[in-house]
Each structure stands twice: as C-alpha cells, then as structure tokens.
Amino acid sequence: MTTSGTTRGLQKITIRINNRRYYMTVYLSGKYTVLTGYSGTGKSSFAKYSTRKSWVVEDSCKSVLVSDITTIVDAYNADAERIFILDEQIVNLLDNRLCGLMNRSKCRFLFISRKVPKQFSVDYRDIYKVENLKGREFATTPIYKDYTSFRRSNSYICEDNKSGFQYFSNVLNNVTPGDGLPNVVKRVGEFESAIVDGAACGAYMSDLVASDNLYAPISFEYLCCKALWRDFEIPDDWWKNFHSREAYCTNYLATHSSQFKFNYSKEKCPPYLLHMKLIPEMKVGTKLQQYADSLFGCDVEEAFNTLKNEYGATSYEEAEELLKYVTF
Amino acid sequence: MLYLYFNWAECPYELDYLWEEWFDGNYEESWLFTDFAKKVMREIDQVTPLSFEAVESDILGVLSPTWLSGGVKTLLLLEQQRPYQSEASYLGDNCAPYLEELSERLDIHMHFDIPFQFTNTQKAIFPELNNQIIVGTEELLRARRKNYDYKWDYTWSAEDND
Image (cartoon, rainbow over all chains, first blue to last red; front, side, top):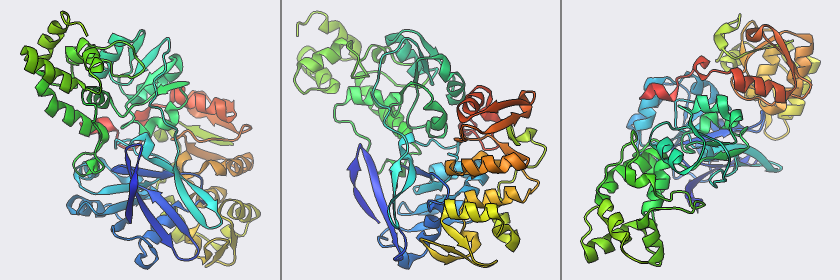
C-alpha cells in the first residue's frame, strides 16, 4: 500500500490485488470511505481477496476484513496503519456504541455498501463506485461531482440552524433553516438552492442531488478557516484524531480564533464572522479583509498583526474601527 | 406486484438483513438452474452455473455459488418467494430490469431505503399511501423524497451520537 499523492486536498492510498485474474485499485481518502456501485462489479470480491496477503501487490498497510462486529473493538485499540473493511451485512449491524468506538479509533474504515450508514459523518467525496477499466482491471472513481462552487439563487435552504444559518441569512436573501439533513432532503424541492456541510452529508447525498443547485463546502468552519488563514489546509492525517473534516476545522477554529479576541462556538456565530467574505464569489467583506486584500498576498491574520504593531489594535473590533479612518 | 414501504416496520414480513449469509447456508441446486436464475447470473455476474457446488465466472474462474454478487443472491431469493422483506439497497441499479420482470409474476415486498433507480415502466404499490400505484422511476423517487422519514430507518441516526 502506498500513498500516491494528494489531489483536491484528499489523501489517496492504493491497494492492488493481483492474482493474475483480478486487478483493482481502491482509493481511501477519508476516515470512512464508501465503495458502492452496480451488482457484480467485484466489491465483495475485493474484500475477500484483500485478506489473502500473497495476492495483495502493495501491502505496507494491514487490511482487516471485519467478519464479526466484535472485531470493531480491535479497531479501537489498533494502530493507525490498519484499514478495516466492512461488508454490507456488517454495516447493517453497526449500532451507536460501535460507532462511537470507530469514531475514536485511529484506524480507517472502508464500507462496502450501497447504503451509506447515517450514524457516521461521511464526506460525499469519499464515496466511490467501481468501474471496469478494461478486461480484468477495475478501478474506483468518485460517484458525485464537485459541489463546492457557489451560485446565487432566489431562495436557499441551509442545513444548519445555528452559526452557519446565522451567517448565510446575514449575507444572502431568503435563507430558511433546514434543521438537520433529513428535513433538508424532504424540503429540497421547495427551494432553488440547498446549502449543506459536505463533510457530513454522504449518507443523504443520493437524495440531495435532486436539488438543481447544491452548495456543499466541507463545512461552515472550513470556510471561516480559509478566509482567516490564507494557507489553511486540512492535513492528510487528520483522520488519526478526528472523525470528520468538519470536526478538524471546528477544533482548529476554536483553538486559533482567540488571537482575534473572539471565541468560536457552533451555537452563535461571532459578530466578526457574520460580515466576513467566506465565499469567494461574494463581493462584500469586512474592512479587515479588504485591507488584507489591499496588502498584496496578505491574509487576515497578517493584516491584523500589521495593525496591532503599527497602531496598537488589540482586538478585531478595534481593528475594524481603526480601518474606518485609514485609506487603503 | 412490487410493494414498497417507506417504513420497514409497516411491512407484513420481517426485515432480513442477513440474507447473504442465509443464502450461503441454505441455497439449493434447483435455485441456480431456473431460466431466470441463469439469465441474471449471466447478465449481472458473467457467471454460468455448473452444479450445486460450482459456478464458472468469466473473470474469476470456477467458484462456489457463495461468491455470487449480493444483487444476484437477492434476486434468486426473491424468485424463491422467501417470506422476508428485502431492501432496495440489496440490489444494484443494474438489477432493475430483472426486478421488474420478477414483480410481474410474483409479489415482492421491499423497503424503499435508498433512491433505487427503477426502470421507467416499473409499477409499485405503496400500502402506506392507501395502496396508491405509482409508475416509473422519476415518480417513485419523488414519492420517496416526499414521504420518507429517516427516523424509520432501522440504523442509528447521527443525532443519536450527541
């Protein structure tokens, strides 16, 4: 098994099984990766073959086929090098307690199931289908296209009803809180656009794609981090300590936002973020953002530090107030 | 006829989520040699049945019938009228024409748990909607989005984790 580079910020690991009859590559890009697709494309065969170590060509990582749910307990204690493969029947048996163990483990999991389990925060970009390339060679490709570019509409339904909704209702017109993904799925036909967290909507994605105009960034916190820190990227090994990319971004924002003298919480969007330009397609933004844009190649943190050093601004409010009198 | 249920608990039969395991331990030779079984094995898995113990795959060689795909096993079990409820997620979208063929001659009860792509001529009865008959994949999926409640799913929801 090798790490074969990073594409779109997603780490990819390849497993190849070659017994001269069957050759298949599977990409594992998140903590939970889902393999789905037509019947008879070799998903379950892949799971069975992956346990035959002499047939696995690239094998620097141990893969474990979960044949019994008690094996999940091993995942909790295992090292980060292991990949646990769960076939459809095992996925159906997972309960809340096992889900908690899997979320806290340092391993990765591959679900081979058409039904994406709802108790896990699965990123829609981590859902793959199996395709027959030629003859006996199979490969996996992402099942959904990219939904991270924003397009303006007349009405929106927002999955979040807390900080994310507070922000989007502040900068867009006609935004309705969805109060959870199941409700968004039910009402998606009533609105022109739907705004959801891409890092957690995998289980509902097959219904959500019915929306004409879907906007699914990783999460609201990811947009905040990208706006505040120009070089912010989710590291490739985020899954060792977090169960989703959203959890990583929330933790990062909560621990690093104190330098701007505000504490981020999911319950209430800080006033400073309410006026920021989080979506690149938007034209408005805070004074501090505009100031950062005017200083070539600066991000918000660097602009804030400049104001702090030159004018003694100690908080974002002071910085905003100061910039009312500064021409840039 | 195909009977679809939004809520799995409304179905008159028990939900069987260990269907593959049950097939592996209980299949009979006659199940593999019906015209329908031979057709679905060939079209979906590229497999020809040889005997009770063996099927021949174009790609993987001679195998045990326990290596058949989940979709084919489900169709074979449906043809044998096993008195259990199945789920739409047991079948890949490429099984839709065979499901339609089967539902024309047998009664099939199925939990509509994923947005399965039926054929455009598939007829289905919804007992939860006063036995309303809906035809075609677009209409069936629209009915699902409107009426499906995710609390009816037997798996745990993400909210339970908080």
